[in-house]
Each structure stands twice: as C-alpha cells, then as structure tokens.
Figure 1: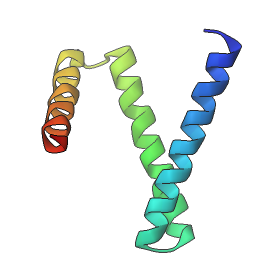
Figure 2 (figure 1 turned 30 degrees about the vertical axis):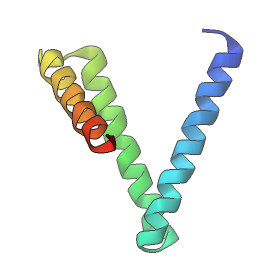
Figure 3 (figure 1 turned 90 degrees about the horizontal axis):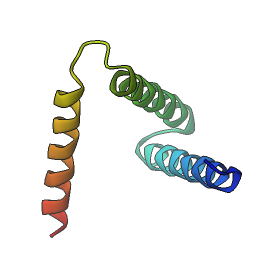
Length: 78
C-alpha cells in the first residue's frame, strides 16, 4: 500500500468519525456523542478482528450477514 493511499484512507476514516460524532451530537450533547463514537469504534474494531482472525469459525456467516445488509440498503435506495 502506497503512502498516498494510506494517507487517503486515514483522512477518510477521520472524516467518517467526524460525521458520526456530529450526527450523534444532533441527538444529544457533545459528551455523549464522543462516548458513543468511541463505543461504535470499539465495536467496529471488534467486528474487524473477528472477520480477520476468524476465531469462532464463523467468517462465512458474518460475510453473509454483511452482504444481506448491503442488499437491504441497496433496495431501499432504489
């Protein structure tokens, strides 16, 4: 992975994190928004860890679940 691609990925992650925090702030206060963003980030890292390491031999189920969610989202957009 090139340095430029790493920097773009890092920037995209930070922009996404800012958008999530701002959206959560609209629901309540900045303190809760930051805490919720941290919790969402931890859950995302845990899911990423499970997918990458496959400790429970359930990678196919997780991939199927994610593809089902993507299908539902794409059908709602149509």
